[in-house]
Image (cartoon, rainbow, N blue to C red; front, side):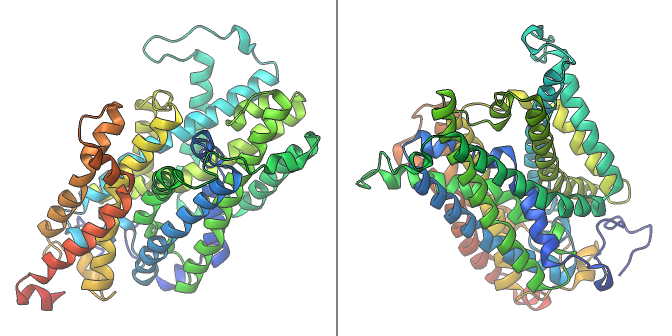
Length: 483
């Protein structure tokens, strides 16, 4: 491989991971997923389902189904990372071309920047609560909002303090993230189970928390709610199904990456959403209102010691999720723009800066906007990219890719693969009218587009796989033999 300084397509962070340096076991991969899955958005994920009439087991099964579905492309795309040892921005050069790869890489990076900002704001809110409980300031008197920002100075300072922790870890590199996830995973699971036990002990009749009351007892309208929520569940981790090679490139074997993901993703997501549902049901009995946000719940627990310990657990959960899910991918994506000038650490710092500039506290809205506009919206974009990558790797190239070719400007992957770009545009188009309807809250386009949008990720994957395969088979024979 040409790893010389003059090669503009490679740096130490984007280069293939050598076999002897692939040290991540199935437990490391599982711990990675536990660290990412145990977070406040996961805890609150079932809020939209319950608010629309599902009961506890319907919502829990919907979460499980969505994560079992997204696990499939996760393991399949992870296969390429483990076999080739390359990160997502380099792998996608095979399907989109060396120059065209910037489109999916930056699309993924910008979504991650949005999520990074949101998670950092949530962690900052937990830190804000800790400072209030410790008497550093009086939250009831902290009402003066900063101009332009629309939040108080102490809220902004808490946000920046939590943000700074991310910066320190980013500067230490990917290995520090692995260490954090491995140590945090058992603690996070224990914290979630402790919260569940608290809920069961605080109510007089724990069986009341498992009531089967539902608006869909006869199942007549259940599917109208189920499929949008299922798509949202897939959308929750759809971005990771793109850049999972960023992590599986460090796996010791295909068994390690597949087993680790199977153990870490669906069980953790299902368990933590279940905890969120049951604990929130308990808050209705204990406090007389449904408290979905664990930060608000912990603040009501009374004992300063319990509040501080719980908030620290929330901080660790948010930190472990944010670093793995929302920093690694954009750091590699930005590095891929100019490998000789932007390292992983520099890309990570760019991510952190964008996460502040977008003012994430303005992005968080009601569950309707969160589910239908944010999650399903970007799953409509991510689905086609996943479809193109999987079709290219498994159906077109039969998993055989010359790794060296991914780093040569004059290789078979040079320039832009316009077949991938055309496929991406066409696969996204059917979901745009439904997205506009959802984002605007108006029926600008006919209801049929809302129905299509309900299945955004699935529609995008199906169209992209079929269309990309057809277009690639139409290549001149000289191009087909070279791949």
